[in-house]
Length: 360
Ligand SMILES: *Cc1c(COP(=O)(O)O)cnc(C)c1O
Image 1: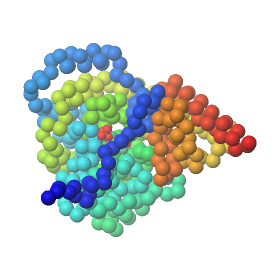
Image 2: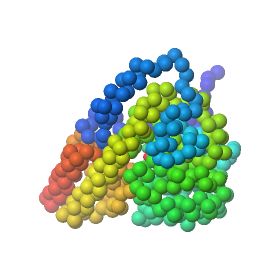
Image 3: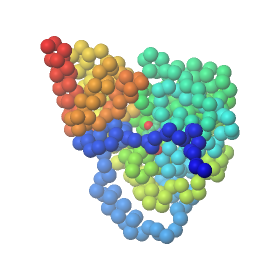
Image 4: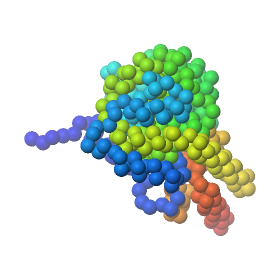
């Protein structure tokens, strides 16, 4: 006798971000800021006083209080998780009945489809238009025509960097019976949030993460905000000790540094704007035929028939960005001034070399 893996998992491969050493990492939408020294000092005191032999607070009360203070929320409406990823998994599995239908937008964050695949939900994609914008009326129709149980999407969107207005998001939530999961992972960089209104709907969950604007991807920390009825269910289905004590304590400390977080957020928005404008300038100077929308998050998304070849070129020069083969696009996270400058210089070098080789 021999054991065989079930069909569903047989050909799956572990998630592989770009491996190898790159001097500039602009591939994962992380913050380009590392933790400042003053916070690291506070972290040391936290580690020294940690009760390593005790389980964490299952409700992460102190952490949720700090998070709520930062965003102006009521603690009874928040669930903390081991990264948003844990919540995405719970939403696709525990929160839905068997044989559920989930509507996603396409392109969007690939994890939504992945967890629905694992949970054997039926996934129905609502495609974005040729400009990569989301048509909310079409999304509403897709959800209702298919009697979907859940619709999930990111706003602003990863990878397109485009967003829908708060008004359009409200219209969606109040026009469908389905549970709406609105992933505002990048909303710190934009101003169309409905986070503080999440509890006024009976079918809305808004997701936040510490991995992007808060610069703490290493901690694995996410939050779901919803009315108390949904929140009770989310707290009930999560594993009891999902957020470890170290993450809870460090996260609490970080969210209490409001001024620092807001200052950094603004610097990241400025860097993104500068990067976008520099690409526009390259486009004008060299008459390039790429498509790039005004970015609402901390990255630019460039659709170009050179995407694959430029991606390889950048990697060879030690610069990692994200390549979306199907969309024929590059997603470039905004970096520090120095990182952006090096990236742009290398892109320009590519353009010049490429033009030379084409003219030969
Ligand atoms: C990066 C990202 C997240 C964050 O996930 P974590 O598990 O909290 O790191 C969530 N949603 C989207 C769309 C993202 O791009």
